[in-house]
Image (tube, rainbow, N blue to C red; front, side):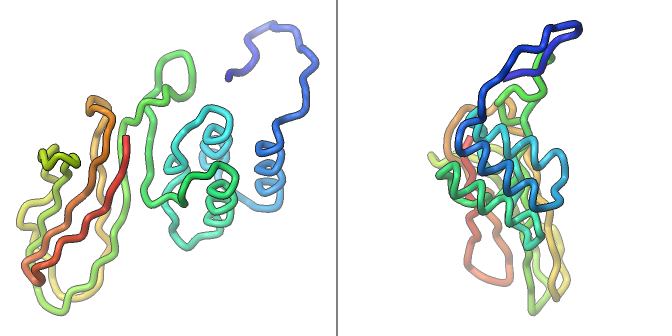
Length: 173
């Protein structure tokens, strides 16, 4: 729950809990960015959301994310949570931003609307309104600042003029 302070005496520790030890073994076998590793540790030690390690993206880091999912009992991550700093600790455990990238492919030119709603239907933010999109495939990064939002269930809603369907991409605060 914290690091040693300046001039603090070293105290003999104890073995890590079994799940943290298993995570350390996975980390030792791979080459992962330090921020992903730190967030993976916080998932098990501080109860952080697994989404703080980033969404499954087809990279080698998915090995770590999938092992972490099994160890934590949380579903594999679909979006990224960034936590707000609190001035004392590295992470406040208060979500600051939610981000994800969606891949889309259009046969024809289309207009795109992306908004974020709470489960009760309230619109929290409009990210794109009638954004023109040409035919073909593309990746669309989505990010929303959520620090002041109440806990609950939310979703990105992606509407296009090409189809009558809506893509719902849920997240939880």
